[in-house]
Picture 1: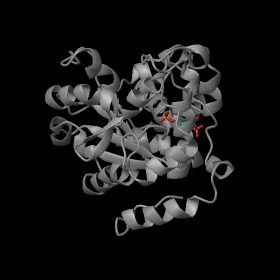
Picture 2: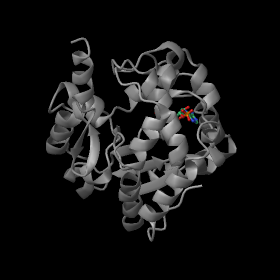
Picture 3: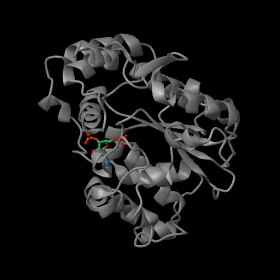
Length: 303
Ligand code: A3P
């Protein structure tokens, strides 16, 4: 009957339970290749986030900090290349085409990214001295941002906001549960503070200058007195701001390496804190209670 194709489409799982998390089914094989083959170097930098936590922004900032002696802000590749190509994902890109890509040709320090939770990272990363910057975001804005994003993708999946919220509360959203994702990195940041830096999108938005200096120190690229005097930090922060990145042609009309994403524009929506109040105030209490229980005793809080 005419309803059959629909049923088939619905029964194909978008995510698969993998080592305790809901991982996109289409990326399982590249995650396994990454776990098996990736060899971390001590000066590698890894940007880890759950989707829609400000990854694009963090990639642009870290790339700018690390490469500030190689490029000026007028000739940085960020002017004409998406941050997602400059800082590629292990699972979504690098290990997708080739199960064992040669990553040794990338100039040091290599900057990679992952949406993967800490336990799923390769053992080689866990045993190396590399630096991980993890950014999380208040879950309500995270859900709204994801809902807009998934509906803008070339995807048959078009969930309602209620669907996204319910899936999130069950801990079954992409790369969820949210709390376990955040707690994995939170606990590592307490255990190994010189290897794992934990921050929230809201903190970065509140004081991007202070956080940018903090990243630079953490990564071993501290700003000199001279650079502070000449306003280098502010220039990087302004360059990477939502209003600047958003209007670059590459980020308005350019394409990401991922076919399902119609335009880089999808990574720049509102760039604000607390946008969720325009979407679902009554449900806030319910998820707040879930989080209170899931995070209890950890010391991790959200604004
Ligand atoms: P909103 O949908 O709430 O606007 P990711 O990069 O992890 O996919 O996250 C995307 C979210 O970060 C989007 O949130 C997007 O607008 C926001 N964002 C992108 N660039 C930003 C920037 N330079 N400063 C602040 N927020 C930014």
